[in-house]
Image 1 (spheres, rainbow, N blue to C red):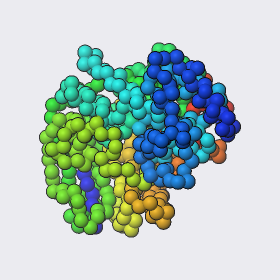
Image 2: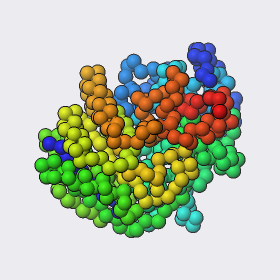
Image 3: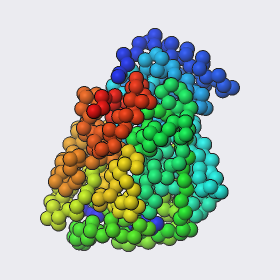
Image 4: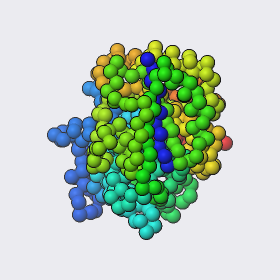
Length: 490
């Protein structure tokens, strides 16, 4: 039995580090952090009793938390800006690779895993939120979560919101810099379309705002993945106006209940509806007992912030304080994600084949997220995020499993790749577009000088990103497997 669930919402690499380099790095930190708060309080090495708990606290994909996973040489958890500056300066001077973590939801673990000796700069202490209703704006530090941001906004106003994701435990740092996708994109665009300033630390350890960094770097960090260019300390965002009440509801149908026909109609309608209406479709094979107990139609009127709880699959009477919980509500699992963009409706006969394929693999969910509205009005070069006009849907492919089994892991990875491959004729081509926030190593890395993934993520915007990278980080200090590389530009 396949179930289709409709969710509706109105409104150049350094040499390998030696033991000596990590020691000199740690000795360097106090020399570049002249503040009242000692940086020593932020340093965790494998010799510290709290090292493992600090490392594990923001690991969101258990595939990258095994006994064989290379652990960092040190974790720095800055308490103030100067600690970030010192970490960058000292890591760069001593040839240490640095990963930047602000929430850990990146699907390939690039913020806390590396094949080379490395350190982690973990921003979870930098999470202040300063809201100004007079200007309908807010400064949000990168270590804050979306849930914390939403909770703080709702505590001040029930008619203000911010158009970003629906997973409360996501850190804003990576979410914003990759695009920031949510239920209000058809009305207000992405998170990056509503960012008006930022405070960063560059590769030289300098603190810069929008004016100081210039238009090119400010453009690049809004959708190009800031971890390729700098560390974002905080974002200044533009709040949006929302009604006091929004409506959410679910329609759950099986194929036997004409779910396939309904989905076929849905894909022709959803991207063309009023921008105040967002309709997501989920396709999955439910467990033998449906634990959600959904009715065919379940309508709710609620505040915008309460709708986030609805989308997080929590009971409707759950207190909004749950948004302050930094651990995912469904727990931490082993997982894999992939993405696609659809430009033409999928023929009915092909949908029938897809349903059969889904039943064969069982443990895969597809989420169809409609575009149109505001997304069609914004130029694909306005930010590095190019997936705008002409897109009907973004597809997210999901697979999650609890079992720590290589056999199950191998099976689930194989099956999600099978479904992704099956969809090849029905999605965008040349390039096959993909969403940066849904990191997917399968589409390529820069470790073997294969940069095809950059076109999938950025299309023609990649050339401008290369220029920004060459100008602001010519030594390639800010790097990971899918960072913007240093290449000659023709």
